[in-house]
Length: 500
Image 1 (spheres, rainbow, N blue to C red):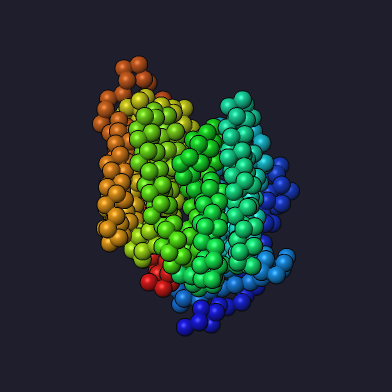
Image 2: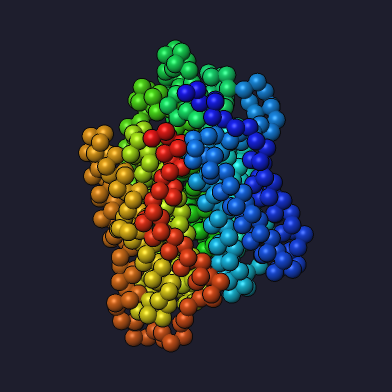
């Protein structure tokens, strides 16, 4: 069937963008009234998530929703689409914003953080950028919203406005804006010169933007374009473009959760997935020999980042390198361009989001309750904070890949996909990473519940963080289990996207 026959033009696609665009302005206007300001975040997040999920019935039928806002040049438009891949990220970002807002209230008020209106405004704009990236129907639209995320998360990284914050913020901006200008922008220009368009083929992940004639006549230029795209999408944190992510841990913990689970890194791996599957397509990826080198770079990132995580005693630093590792599961899956591997990689976008936000919520709750960052000092703390550490333990099991938590499903598909493709190296890397995941997550849980507190530690002073923080992290941990028991919640959208 002609893919264009299942494309539906609808202006409804702009509604989530309008909601998330207007929310920051209302937050600024209501800045002096903190209850109203936070209510705007709740309302915008809820409405956006509901509108996005209203697109689900059409998408599950294999239809692609599309809308062109305006045309810049022939083949260059600002346009949006929702297909099975887009709807996952477009829903996750505002849905998790609901719980991040609740968590922000407890965190920001408990620590009496300054510049809270700026903080909530930038947080909201970052979600606007994430929704725009998710729904981008072409490379130029993706690029514009990708940059929106970079610019407006920068103030969140240097939020504390101390020397450490400014240093981390500068590195964050140089890595993300530098790579996008040096690599992503030239890749976009090369694509337009070679293909005459920047539009993603609707409902087709096989052929990509480049015609067979262009690939036959200019194979090396197409390969160069691909390399520039991957290098320019530094938010995916592939080694050697990963160092911004640990440096950004100077930000408040809710920002770290935003960076690692909701907007920034998810925008990175989502964009890589979109470029591989819609920009280039599965056939050209294999034909040009781009598939396996990409998967091997991602597998290298998975293993090396896991080894580095083992060495970190600061809980946020350990989680940061865990994120560097876990993101590359997505890249391995889509780069293999095989149905089972693609499903595992794309499911991991959603599965990792719920589990990793739980881990960062947990780290923030621990800090608010005890002001502890060092894992070595958390002996016995789980008995004072059972809900926090219990949820943290569930999310850790997901990262390791233990059933029935959702991380197991992703890894199961990835491991089987690597076997189906006869890729022993990738198979070993995935298994090794699972052992390393256990090596840096299990000790946290073990210390918290099974080791006696340090003799000089006054454990009676510690208790759970405010309910506005604990409830979101318990809920997201429960969702991690639900997604493990009912993986079709995301998988059906991926099957509709890939026609699997």
